[in-house]
Length: 461
Image (cartoon, rainbow, N blue to C red; front, side, top):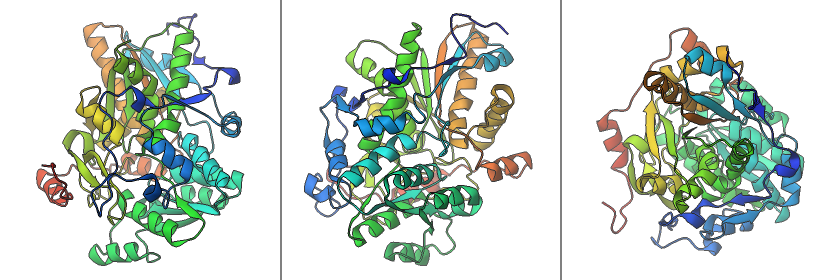
């Protein structure tokens, strides 16, 4: 193995070097993300309308297209210090095994009990709920990382936490469910009989294994039906990408510390929280014309909103009670196949990332889940970390890019986001090892059916 002694295996920042403010990439976007629309009137959602669902300060962050840097409250920075700054790791072992001239780095976000980057926004959203004097919050979770993170944040701050977990994940990941309960959260498989929307979905789709869109609908209904509660979300929304910018800010600071400029930046993409957070400061430079990078979003072939979806206004949830967002979408009624085990199950993509993709600032690729798990297993054996299936989409693309460098001889620097660990995903790993995992890819007819339900918005094709 050839190690550059001037670049350590792990690049750590000190606590004093942690970001003091979140970066709002919208401030540098020439074309801003389209506003959320009221599904009843078709008009942009106002502060007053949104504050019935979200915390007041989070609504302000959601609507702020102009403030580049928003200070991180000291209480949140102090909480971050329990697990941040997170390491930027040089993948020397992976480089050697691939026999590539590429230099590979990954930002590792799995060094907290939630096992992922989700805690970065969970503590922020719980903090603002506490500051507002609320009793608790409701949310949805797919693979369970967000629900786990939120339960941790709520436990720390003394808030009640109600989690609606996509039914297939609830059944496949009982230990993730029990971690949430350990931190005091109530966890309900979605769709459920506990909400009007859940009952309606079950009546229309008996036996369904659920989707994030279903769980969102139930969580929103629970929030507006219980005084003193608000709804919080782990991805997609502008506020979430804002909080997650701490990932990219730390990554850039660590690279700058050693004079490293990446050529390619890769992140997995489901709703957009990890990808948006990782790329934010680099995208800011790109938008301002200060630097250029290849930025690649990697999504599952079984839920391909970027690569096969439509850029249009759509409901954010299956029950059609949430505002309309303009995004790359597969249709709010789209439910991934039950054999899809790799996370990233949401039908749409962050409005910020959707606009950036539409304007040509980033690329997108989709990968089949067996190839994702092949990369996950390879990475675990070489780098010693068992990655989450979501993260492994980025690993797959990073390996593919490194192999291209081997063929061309180009010495590119590749940075990817390792969003978390996969220790609660062993049912999926078991299916892969037993040869029981297959690659379901929706047909054009499948997608046409789900996209046929897009709302009719003036000016929308």
